[in-house]
Length: 147
Image (cartoon, rainbow, N blue to C red; front, side):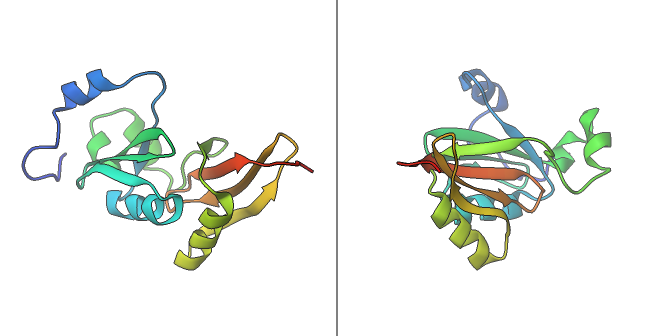
């Protein structure tokens, strides 16, 4: 089921053929809520958004959001309709996104900060943020002297 009125910014086949390498498609309960978190906290830019789909970019990455209702005909819908938290065990890392600023913004807007920004032994300063759909976002930047 589509809620969008009118045409999207690009046809689905044209967009699908434009994708390269690895892409991430997150199924979300509400596009507007998901976009709000990602633009406010992660400084993502919206390439396109309507009630069904959104495409966002940040730090050289591009990803998609699809509203749950667009998956009514997909077998995955049965699984996603049974939970309100998604992505357990997966970290969505946004390299080049300042974790201190992202954590500060998450607190400001009332989102869940699972772990504050810290320098890690693998050479990255990172924090762990949980978005309204339960996805774990990990903004990170290289750190000079990991502990």
